[in-house]
Picture 1 (cartoon, rainbow, N blue to C red):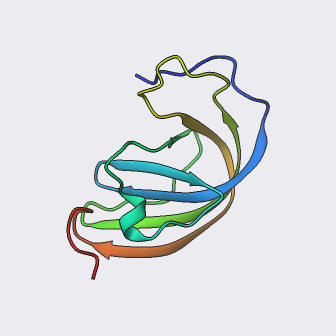
Picture 2: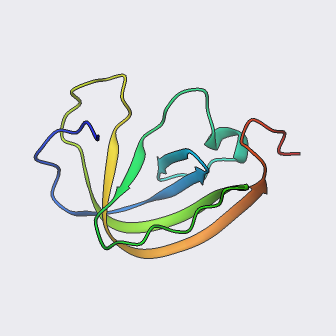
Length: 110
């Protein structure tokens, strides 16, 4: 279940980086984190993809960082501050694989 405020913002163009692995979903608006920064000890904002919008492919064996430009919406309020905010993806314009590293994010990236 997603905990989100309704209504969301008006549709807008959003750019940033999406870090993903087997069980990780983290979005960094307007920046490109290093592998260490992409998997912090806290829960960063995440992405939710509208039905019919194909997310960039994930992997069960690699952590990946995708550069994304999409039309989406933001939450307009935060009901539970301890739960990270969600960006709702409605249409992807651009996607590019920035890096991919083997193993679970807690492994060394060197």
